Length: 138
Image (cartoon, rainbow, N blue to C red):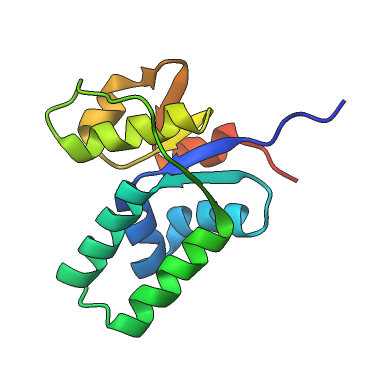
């Protein structure tokens, strides 16, 4: 019997790292693009990504549109029904909400506060390196 595909939320810092620096975050994004795992995101996470790419990395309109289009095409967009308020940083709570709504197995992040949680409602919170070790995809 085939196992259900792994579902994962990539925190904004991981998507930014994938787009700007490559490395392990890009390997994980590629698994999503190749449909080997399922990427979950929400409109608030997408808005945060666009905001960071605009303000910190000065993406022009064309690059922003291309990035948004790629994510909407390759990730499953969820609208969280649950509101989480357990971390000080509200954007971290949005990550947790998307993961719960998308029935995710993992949240991949570089965020220390999220990583300190370790787990939320059964969803493991891990670094890119740990995720790639844990998830064996063929």
